[in-house]
Length: 112
Image (tube, rainbow, N blue to C red; front, side, top):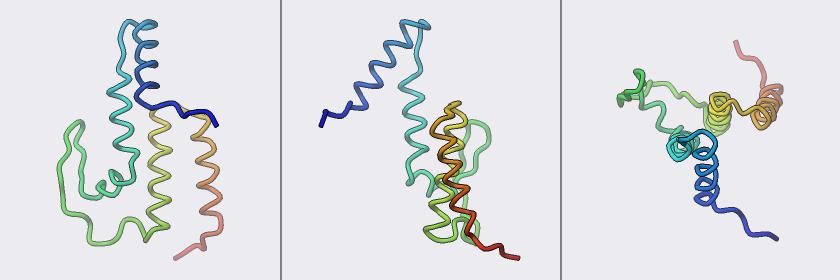
């Protein structure tokens, strides 16, 4: 089995490529931002945050559950990740993720 590529080396390499091709790079900042918001712990805190442009305010959560247990949380988190992939204009993984989400909700009985 080959050794995995360490993320710090991948980021450094891509930063050098971006700097050489475009004269500047924002790879480190973009990676940091996306990795923090892709982490499930960050998503758990979303119900305690309210965004106003670039500003974040901490608020009390709604009295009702926003996730519907672990299954609801998992679907919410996957939907959140596909939104982030859309912001990054990534299409291959995002399309597969959306297909998986559709399969997950196909068997959910409708409620009134």
